[in-house]
Picture 1 (cartoon, rainbow, N blue to C red):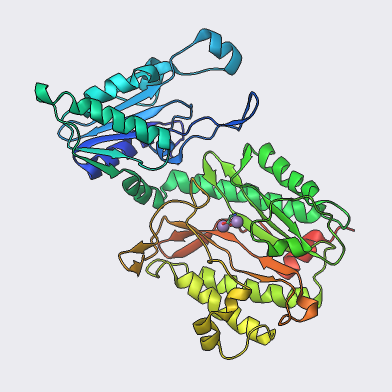
Picture 2 (picture 1 turned 180 degrees about the vertical axis):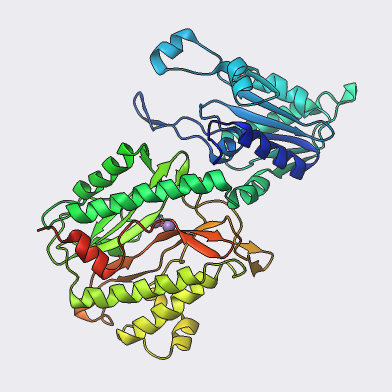
Length: 437
Ligand code: GLY
Ligand code: MN
Ligand code: MN
């Protein structure tokens, strides 16, 4: 297994990108630090594209790649600063960062504007993540104007600006062995956290108490942050798709839907489990649960190479549509439920998304007008659900049942690998895990 601290993997990625863009200059800043309030900042999170190509995690850094006859890869970063390092800790500084991370050159970030005006000269195309950050956009445009002012010295500014993200996103869509290993470990930690939450949960607790079990389990395995804000939704709260209040009491007889996954070494996991607060599914809860579980099994079976992106969604929809008919939630045939989209009252989201450095990861879902074929190395979530808000056409015993079951699936040459199997999922597994006498 390659080692994360073997930085050659990042220079190989940079070379691949340079080969793809052929001629021009790429400028890729990392993410800014963000103030939360007063002197407090949100925990710093690097930009995923930047980190994918550099392995460098400090803020105030910019990657510049030159593609053409000669390939150059340049880092701009903060200078060493003895006083600041006393307060904020170690920083590499250009000299050490350049060597350690395998750049051809590295300069202080304060020299960025001046050097970029030089570096952009006579490059035909500027590749840049236009539209991500208004301040950066304005700065880049201004620098390009500064290059134009050198026209009388025979220096040309890039005639074209293209979105560099299109190239990096397609690279990121196919996870290499190193990435697969990290994602496998991330899903394992999150799976353990779901198991722990099932063991912990009792009626009378508050949603945030269960959330705390996840955060502790993530953190004690070195995953200091969740990959997204955890959804810990008891009872009716489960029918609010992006519920993040996490502050209600959990009552006997309710279901608890938890969508929580850690970020490990820059990679996300994204797992949802739904289980009864008191450890035992009621017959009505079980009926709905088994339908969602069957829909998920069908979707996972359809997640294999050669199938199109939409195959898992279509497979899940057919099972859900039949289930909704059986529960008298929808009328007519499976075909008519799909055709009229009457299922959307109870299942209104898609069955998954790409997963990687970002929880909703990059990469196109269509090529031209066609859903793209699944390929080994892609990782996606499979997450069908069912959300039954009180309504005249919903039998009363089903009111406020909200269920989602979400796993992380790696496409392999001969099918797939479910990375999140450690999280108990069948009714039996869940009830056994929760049986805490
Ligand atoms: N946790 C976000 C999602 O499932 O897409
Ligand atoms: Mn998801
Ligand atoms: Mn999720």
